[in-house]
Length: 138
Image (tube, rainbow, N blue to C red; front, side, top):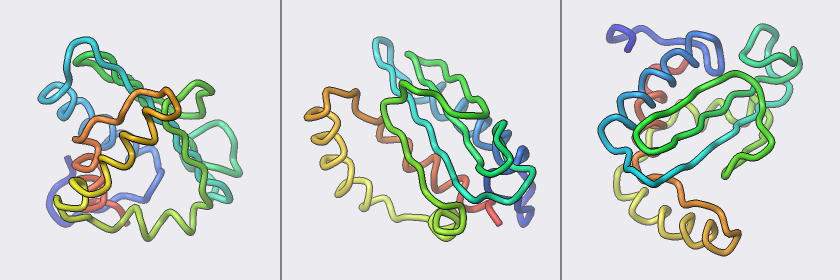
């Protein structure tokens, strides 16, 4: 992780490196055999030079299988959870940490929606991913 006080630009290559580091740590600690989950996030109207091959947007994805994770730039079509939002609208959310109890309130709803859509449920530790990244995102 970055040294205390050091922040990185949201959806930059440095930010993606940190996301990879945090995800590898979380999945190694909490991943479970026989589980999988994938996420794709796209941020439209992003500043030039952000992650992903398209200069007009930033995009990244990750795929968790058992106790391993693969993190990459760009979009994937078959993600279990896909998000597309304008960069400037996502930025305040990316910088905000959320209390643990919010996960207890939100995760059952997300799991129900996943079940209804016949998609895998997100692992509960993804809130920790968000909060750890929020602390270093400028």
